[in-house]
Amino acid sequence: MTGSILLKICLESSAINEVISLVRKKTNIQHPKLKEVIVEDFSNYTSIESLFADLDVVFYCLGVYTGAVPKDEFKKITIQYPLALATSIGKYSPNICFCLLSGQGADRAEKSNLLFARFKGEVENKLSQIGFGSFYSIRPGYIYPVTPRVEPNFGYKVSRFLYPFIKLLGKNYSITSEELALGMFTIGMNGFSQEIVENRDILSVLRH
Image (cartoon, rainbow, N blue to C red; front, side, top):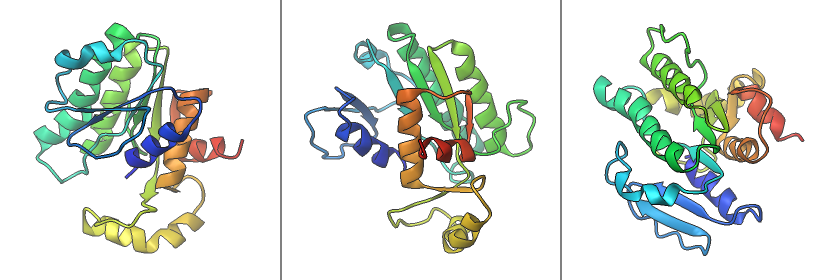
């Protein structure tokens, strides 16, 4: 939902020379800047680590909805997968800017009863401790998908229907998929004043 838009922004940017896109399956996107790499195991990058030399920024958008998979699989995707990539990249591009698509309510105390909040907080802590050139935890509220899609559950169907009202609540609560992608790109390219970037902060960079 967000990664595909972010990819398009990167490919169209004159500031980007090359994009390495790690995907689960071939997308058939053709672009002279794009190097698409199919990854069979997102917990092991040994065979492609040589690609990670001299990178400037990583936009990590892989995730899974709460309840979509069993707890152990949810934890693996949320914590192990980004850590595996970060560890491999850190060997070859230690000064990189790493942008993690996290979520509102991520709990860095790692005590929340909500798995999403606890696991997102845990992976934020672990990535922050690696010591990259910079690390940003991007925490959007409700993400309104600009491109219509099959919603993953009833809650998201309701949220999509109620989006005009959610938007009225203010800049802390919602963001469109396009705004999120452009905000992530801007932060990754230009930096930000703080490591944790809340929904209001993401929108703020679009105004400058």
